[in-house]
Image 1 (spheres, rainbow over the protein chains, first blue to last red):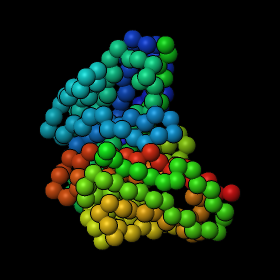
Image 2 (cartoon, each protein chain N blue to C red):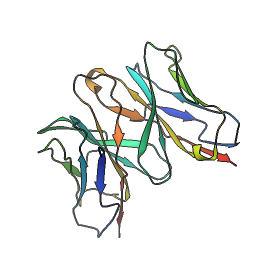
Image 3 (cartoon, rainbow over the protein chains, first blue to last red):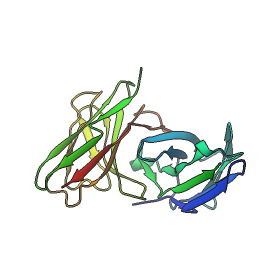
Amino acid sequence: SQQGEEDPQALSIQEGENATMNCSYKTSINNLQWYRQNSGRGLVHLILIRSNEREKHSGRLRVTLDTSKKSSSLLITASRAADTASYFCATDAGGTSYGKLTFGQGTILTVHP
Amino acid sequence: DGGITQSPKYLFRKEGQNVTLSCEQNLNHDAMYWYRQDPGQGLRLIYYSQIVNDFQKGDIAEGYSVSREKKESFPLTVTSAQKNPTAFYLCASSIGTGHSTDTQYFGPGTRLTVL
């Protein structure tokens, strides 16, 4: 079953603007990960945030996690045309689901030059 | 040059035929995974293996089979029992057992089309 749900489904912005994508999930998690997929390619890992962390940064990426609301957001600052891709959140529920990731439907980001 | 490879990139199959998708990794990872992706959708887990000679069903295992005879290899067979096999198939690997926060590394994918 799909645990993560991303919002919005599609986002179109101009180069230089910030892009924010949200992810909601239903059950408790060990960690939440964000991945990027260019059209027709495999996924590339962007960032992982553990359940006891609230915010994490990596370059132009900022991820927040609110476990009380079961939600996460991915912020891409100063976007570039090369950021155009689909972005997925994935949750690791741990326990009997150890090692398994459950992916959301993804947000399609288009950055116009 | 470490990584995870999938072959072929494109695969065409006639209805009623079984077909095997290859996945190889030289990252020395214990865990390997197979996902299916349909247009505009997220990934759904087909099978996963945490260690050699062991594997578990994911969320949509019906019509698929796997083997894990070697650490480096995790082939997926799409059988004729799979009702709607046309999709993009992604293989991934991760460090595996004992690491509770595994990042998964993905191959480039195989696009399977049933004619």
